[in-house]
Image 1 (cartoon, rainbow, N blue to C red):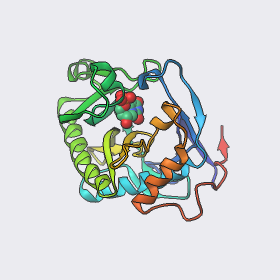
Image 2 (spheres, protein in one colour):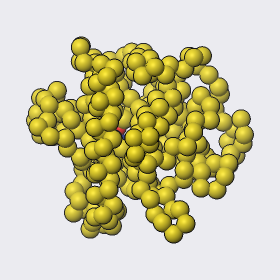
Image 3 (cartoon, protein in one colour):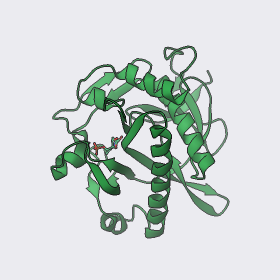
Image 4 (cartoon, rainbow, N blue to C red):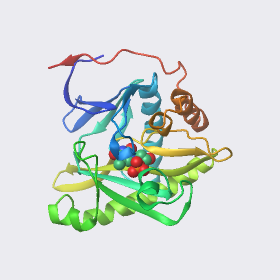
Length: 259
Ligand code: TMP
């Protein structure tokens, strides 16, 4: 594995400089954590063995399919079991949550029974801040603080809804209900043009996925609510997508870090 300079370390991923200018390498860790935004009284950390390998594979698959469908993404190609090459983007400081069914913070905030189907899909914005636990914000806040422009927000909403339509159908085809998910977007500078790209990852870490028959949770809620069986649930999502890593999720050690 090549030696690379680390740009950023998050809860579940590390970003390294890529091999060419304008690229980054996303390394998927097995680490996981909750925060009070997801309804926990305390922040809790843990490890789901093999999660990074599965999320790298699942996100590769979903980002590639979404790109083929016409929503541009930062994903270029998977490099190995835990790393993927992506375009370097300026991350827009918004967490975009798309909801089809009431669950999580939405169900709690509005006192709606979890599992209630929403009359229409909702796109929510949260300000991306670990210290503030990603608070819910409106387009007024976004415009006021200049986090994004109205035309960029229109594009983000349109890309999010297209992604939702596509993923809802894809998951329904394998017996999984897409309850909600979060997206992040970035700005990519090409010549004199700025393009908005879907960035970060799409995996059971940032989607709620329920089995159509049993309503079993097949996502990070298993960790959030101490249900156990996280690795098995992520593995089952990969299996139904037809992309289970052949050698299993246990694999290579992490990359060599240069400080
Ligand atoms: P929530 O119900 O806790 O607000 O989460 C909605 C969905 O978005 C759920 O699938 C988890 C995901 N999410 C993240 O992955 N990261 C975040 O920072 C937030 C706010 C939500």
